[in-house]
Length: 350
Ligand SMILES: Cc1ncc(C[n+]2csc(CCOP(=O)(O)OP(=O)(O)O)c2C)c(N)n1
Ligand code: SF4
Image 1: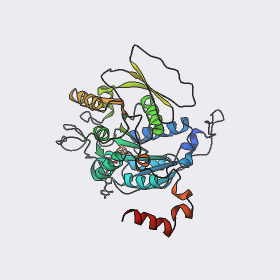
Image 2: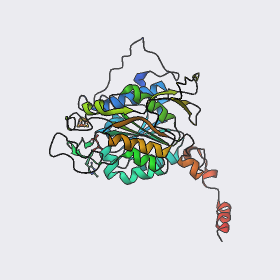
Image 3: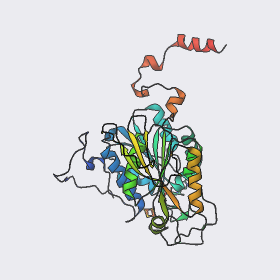
Image 4: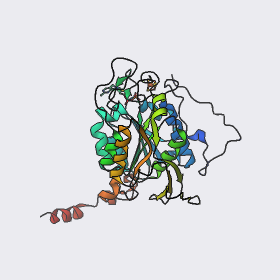
């Protein structure tokens, strides 16, 4: 059964610069469990797209399989969408991105979807620095298939059923930093104040913007012994920085606090303003970002916030020197330059 939202909109609500209301970024009514972290992340994505005044039809939402991968049904009804098979979202995103670079690609995946069956897909999308926002809804388990530990479950963490997890966990932020993603962040579904500006900055970044969002599964993995539970994350997280995202169109003012602030300009001239809580976290230094993640892990802490940013990063299109025009806008002449041109190319290889 499909539930749809009522068309009523409060007359006091305001449209964004593109003339759209928050409602225009919403999707169908969620069928996820009440309290599932994924719903909060979806709310934050809707809010970020509305605040950035992105034209809804310029967005492509993509996913794999899992409770998290059902999310595209619950947001951005006016966007393009493709719900792929388990773990295959990155290759669908790659193909679509290569065909049309004029759209914003928003991939939504789970830790099961990306860190197990889709691991090979994930690492290659990252190392190509594909221009997309990759949101990982990380609950440390396979929610849809009833809570088995996923590869991001921490060693010693305990879910609702069975023994504690005995295996080492995979940290997808560390892998993303190591393999060349230009924007890597970690957040928590219960922290909208941190998550919305991070999403807005990720959407303005050119290249792979990877966001690992800890998102408790209230049904199978929200126990006192689980390191992905609401209680644990609230008690054990530490933010790298507080974060402002200032779009290019707004006046950019800076507040320096005794060397504890940092402003970084993105490709589109918007600015990320960081007010550092911990001066050891130097977000534009890959090695320091990895060290900070490991250091916090050793102390049993989850480091959140912007972890790594390369404002100069080159996305796949730039590296390959692809045409600036989306393939569907190229005429026959450009797509099929004729036998003479082919002859020339062949000659050049003789
Ligand atoms: C090829 C294939 N193998 C296995 C499955 C079964 N399956 C469905 S969802 C899922 C894991 C989902 O976990 P995750 O991506 O973490 O999403 P969550 O439900 O926790 O949000 C699995 C193993 C499947 N659908 N397809
Ligand atoms: S089973 Fe877990 S992940 Fe799936 S909808 Fe319910 S709470 Fe969310």
